[in-house]
Length: 255
Image 1: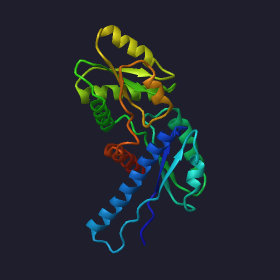
Image 2 (image 1 turned 60 degrees about the vertical axis):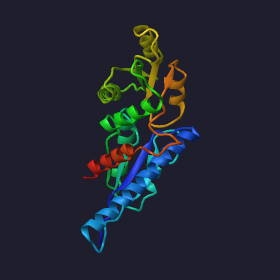
Image 3 (image 1 turned 120 degrees about the vertical axis):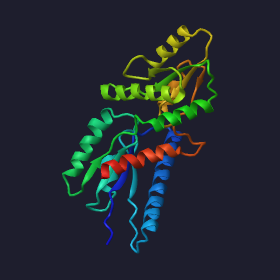
Image 4 (image 1 turned 90 degrees about the horizontal axis):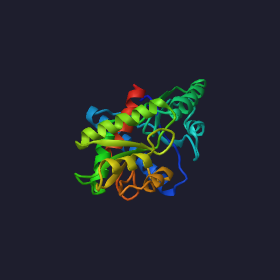
């Protein structure tokens, strides 16, 4: 009998934006489809009469929306193991505290649960960011600022600075960094400094946000000439790089 693989529990931040919810749901559906396809390919390659079972895939949220983490885990079969994959770009408070505590509580029952790493930093995210900049019409003489949500957790701030360096390498240009909350420089100040340093140049914001919503609205109101779309949008396919990262994080924790 084929052993049940751990369920993949994708946990997003949660948002009140209907557009943002739809974008995250699309990522969830793309991951679910990819993991079924992968199980099918593995079974076909092995020529097995009893092909591998595809893991269960669930979507939950750490804030704002329901189901929350405990409710999402409770939707699984009794004792079914799980890997919680944060659909978060940096490992801040939600990963190190909220999700860590939720996983520890689940492990106190008879359900094995592992916590995977956050989606970023990752060079594949830089590839998607660069694509969004190209789609927004970035020019060689533009000043580019990477906009991030921000965190009071120093580890998350370091992750964001890491992503700015990765985007700079991917684009072959200088990238400034601006935070929308909790850390400095704030995006509005980073934009003002870019204008001062490069008079007459356009300031383009690269949105390092997972989906449309409150923070994307803040980025678009911060005074840049151009703001790129977030990583996920409702009018374009889910980037394959994001699906790959989710599956990689799941595999690393499941292994």
